[in-house]
Image (cartoon, rainbow, N blue to C red):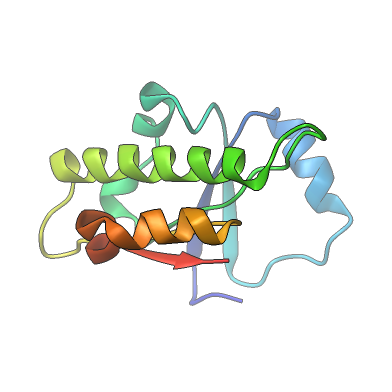
Length: 128
């Protein structure tokens, strides 16, 4: 549930049809309009296509792991994406609405790295 007329932009490597098919079996979202984008969250050009200058918040969520991967692989992706978003913020956001980045971490070790970085700590929230 969200405030009236919330718009959520979703960046995913899957096609829009695949994204919508995954959502079809779920109950409809209340007051939320989803806008699907196809791209890689680790590519600056794909992140740049999103309207981050007007976002109140940005969620950076873990990715599904391959069988041979550890949680650190997903955490590294999340951290890199978060840092790239922060750099895009610096050039496109007004100081009146700094927005917040909410980042998901899986590993306690990654969380420690995150918390040692003053820049990340001051501009982002972390959850596991």
